[in-house]
Image (tube, rainbow, N blue to C red; front, top):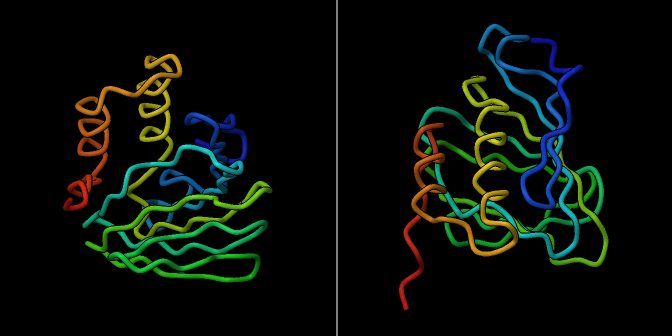
Length: 150
């Protein structure tokens, strides 16, 4: 697959464009750009054991939470999410945010986002089927984080 010709993938309001896919890199890296509108619903906190994720801010600010610690990521900022770290993000600002995500090795690709997009579309604007969300995450090597203690 030539990632440069892959159509934009939508997961709710979030847009994902793959720049380098697992097939392009022989499995060494996956690179995608993610556009997160202000106040968009975002993926559930999760971890993954098969790859690291490096995030580089391009536009706006996303607040990432890594193992419970918030980190604001703006243009030119970067962070590394190690294997097993629970993380998630949100755009709390009033403008769209964009970041580049680099997964190494490149075992994570468009299929996850396509599958998750279908689950969210099936919810027709209502709450998604959490069992289906968890199943998609696990099938693609992500471990949903347990809900916060109350």
